[in-house]
Image (cartoon, rainbow, N blue to C red; front, side, top):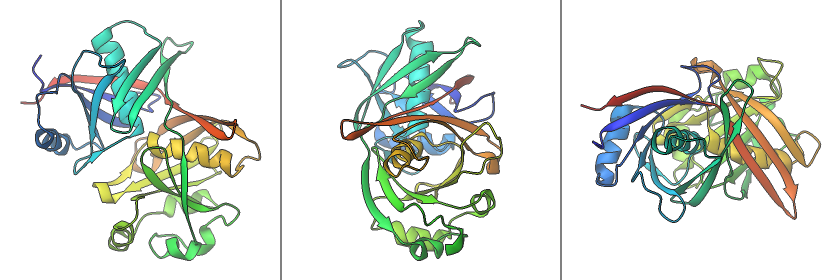
Length: 295
């Protein structure tokens, strides 16, 4: 197979052309990292993935993930979308689980059949690491929100399950929809911090069947706003349990994201505290959009 052949999938999409689009290249092991980076930039999606071989190695498939400007060790929607391509285009049989070998280690992805004949694709990320807590005035000067928009009942905190994010609770849907980064200030503030992206959220939702409305800004990685972010939501799921956001030590919720940029997405989160740790699962539907060749 020519390594330039690729698939495009919509991840966290309830219907085609919603969710977060992803390009997945197969048999890409002979490509250099520089070539992968150029292809990711040319594709223009928030991430592009490269399956190095159609053959398993140590029980998983070797995968590299690139944004348009940098390689990243882990990202959520690329993990789910790539596992979907492996199952449907390489294995071509309904296996219950696919493992991806990423820079952060092996990540298992499972498939939960639905009544409509599709699947919810679930990943189990690495254990969450809770880090720095910030004050409202630290963030309000970097974003298009006021200190009064920030929900002071919960901390502003950096959390990582392989890729760190600043999680920022807001009081209202109006504040989340108004939110954005002041780019120059933000890029200067994060340059010496591990967490380069900010995830803002509130309990008010557009669809009453959902539990959280969220947005994620990734200017540092060349993506002004991501329509759906599995890595951020894996951190978020652990945060919700750690700080008892819903008053319990477990959650089973739906997060809506991407509405502001015309890519409405739905992320499923499960998490519970167990034996001193927080077990997290992040899920969503994946839809095949196209098979193509870069020429």
